[in-house]
Length: 82
Image 1 (spheres, rainbow, N blue to C red):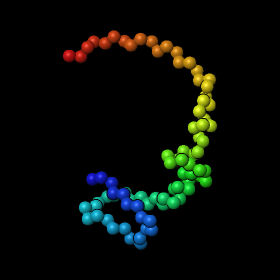
Image 2: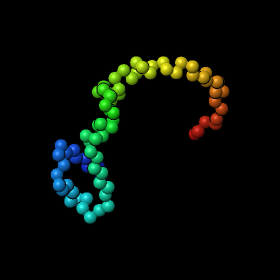
Image 3: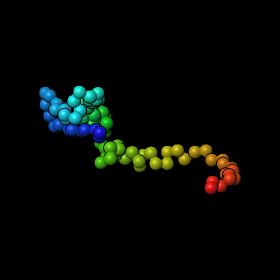
Image 4: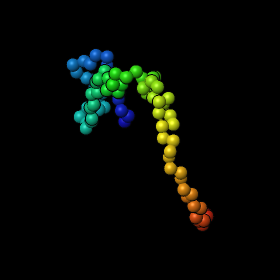
């Protein structure tokens, strides 16, 4: 059975449960979307993907002195599978 997702603009006092899920063990999560959006942006302007505007321009190249990767050696020779 796949998850059922329902978004309400204004949540009703009761939520209808599909008959096939009644009398079964289920998990119900109520997630207020308006509060979630506030936490996500923290008042900062974001682009359509949720990243703060100017984030990539400000952080690009911020770690120029990364250590060089040492040679990793050669692959071992293995017997071929039949």
